[in-house]
Every structure is written in structure tokens, then in C-alpha cells.
Picture 1: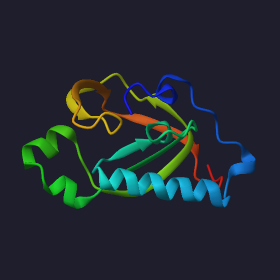
Picture 2 (picture 1 turned 135 degrees about the horizontal axis):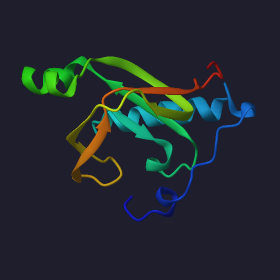
Picture 3 (picture 1 turned 90 degrees about the vertical axis):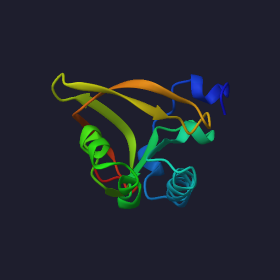
Length: 131
């Protein structure tokens, strides 16, 4: 998917008319399946060619268990179930950050050092429209 135009454009917001509709729920299901097949812990709709502001995330206990206890502690990984956020907005909470190798599901095999905030607040909507 590297070089795909959808990855270089701002994704469209999910409208209120789309919430709880079959198409959006099927998109979220496809995204979770795609993320798990990679395997990955997060995926945005543009990564599978859909220009919508939708993300899915999940960190399974089995993924966390594959890392050493030291790495789990350094990454502050805690398993959590799959969930989706439509029209996500992230805000850093504090200024503490860390740099880790991260993979990219859009470019299989690609990894890079990425700076991330240690704490963020995510707001948005569930696929059913709940905040």
C-alpha cells in the first residue's frame, strides 16, 4: 500500500448518518480481521484503502506474552480488547514520551523508530455513535 494516494490525504469524517449502519459495522469487522491477520495492534481505515476517520486497536494477552517482561515494562503494555473509534482525536497528557521500534501494516516489513507520548487522551465515537 506504500504510495497509495489515500495514505497521503486527510480522511473523511464519519457522519452521524453512518453510525450503527451495516456498512460501518462491516468496515470495523474487516479492519479488526485485517489487524489480527498481520498481526498488529492498531489499524486506520486508510491503511486498507478506505478514506474514513476510523481506527481499531487491540493488544491481546498472547501478543504481550511474546515479549520479555523487561520489554513489556518498558513499553507499558497491558492487554486490552478490540475496540473502534470513529473520528478519533488524540491529545497528549503531559510531555513524557518514549521512542520505540514500530511496524507499519501499510508497508509490510517496514519498521522505524517512532516517538510517542506515554499518555494520550482519545476522544471520538463508537461505531454505534456513543461517545
